[in-house]
Image (cartoon, rainbow, N blue to C red; front, side):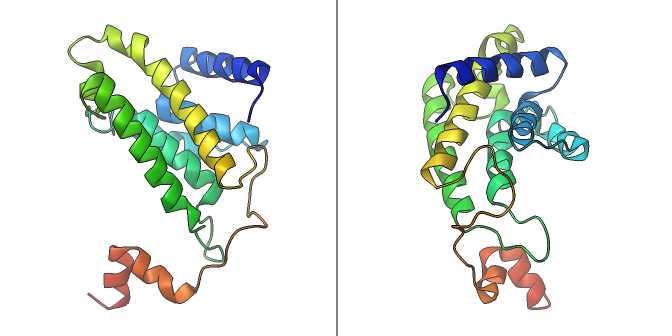
Length: 180
């Protein structure tokens, strides 16, 4: 886990990114990419669509969806030759369970409209704290599942996944493979 100095530096970097106009989901992915010594403007543009509750609709919080994407950066499938790490879904479920309990208890739900309410000043008061909490939780989840924060790419301890079970992991892929 990060030291208190590293945590302070990370929080400072997140504040700096927010001051540059990056949104919750952007900040989380930038932090993960930077930890791996990478940049990916296309990815940051893509996750920007999650901001404000999926395209500023007030739906599910961009800090949560950005956190799920950050887990995917470490355990997701990056090419046809890769397998999705089976821990990814477990880690996202852990993030979801934690996030839902925390935000529902505090704000009555996990949607931006719940968290922000009718007062736009709540964005400034609440969102940075939520982004920081999601960032720390994602790092903790990754560590608990054997992922190194400062490395990218496949992990040596990644369990193999039989290709025959992959179509069944996604209902859409399963229907497509059956010609539906």
